[in-house]
Amino acid sequence: MNLETENQIRDYIKKEYEGNERTKNMQALNLIRQFDIMKMKESETIKDYSDKLLSIVNKVIRLLGKIFDDSQIVQKILVTLPENYESKISSLEESTDLSSISLAELVSALQAVSKED
Image (cartoon, rainbow, N blue to C red):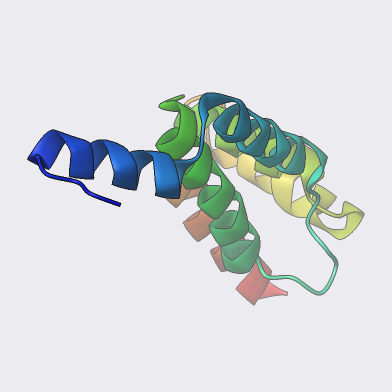
């Protein structure tokens, strides 16, 4: 291999480590599918679950440049929490506008409610 210019080196590294466009799109689709089917496990903490979701989101952003709004992640967490969180969500709904809550606020609020149990 004889790479002489900076552009040749950059192109080689980009191709070698990022893969071609088709591979990148397949990786992104797999990550989006992972995000869509993920549910919180009974044994999992809110923090661990939100960290897993954010890890997937960050990978999708890196691959596609697709931005996920906080509201999408908040909604995902709220609809995929185990049943034992139903009362916690209800109490949060009474005290907070869940349609405009940030991810950090939601995680903190759910952690606080969980500690009360």
